[in-house]
Length: 283
Image (cartoon, rainbow, N blue to C red; front, top):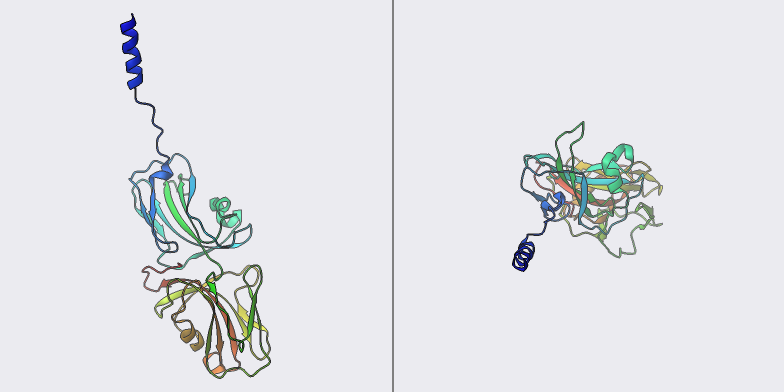
């Protein structure tokens, strides 16, 4: 009897413990810098039993709240086949209002997330889109985030409110007769090139009146992406080589603007996307 008991105890001790399966989202590898198309690797078919999200890169920008505007780039991969089914990293980022109506299932994930964050989402199929997908999306910056640079004394002063919107005060002096380029914040991202489209937020102020004459900071407005061709000379000459993350002041004389007034632009350079659809960047 004692011998049988010893054998049973020995067998029990050798039994392999139950191993918990690796959560689906942990089976996905994501590599690459923020703002640039990531590499998404997993073994297909990937079985997704529930929708889940995890943070890949933690951002340090302003935190999004209900009703804010978010700027997002994403790539979506079919969980069954491993095929890319959606990708806007090679084109302009998407502007999205952080509301349940506009953001849908991403709403709860965007509220409280800091700009500069990369998220990974494993999503079950829905009635509208039955295929399960793996989505990686970057919550891009909606304002310049580079290092502040002290401007010279003889240019208009710029103050920013809590949302990042600039107020420009024109000095009581004659405007310069040539284009002036003043870096207010210096980013470390991709440089603007003539073949790129550029995503910006800006304010334009008349030197003569001191009034805002154009811009993208009014309520409900957000970043805009424009082809870097056919712009006024002041933009064409002043933004080339500016880096993503920068805030640049351009003081543009009439002959390089619209012919009737010197204009002061304060431009936040948020992302670039090559016109040919190859990789751009927001880093």
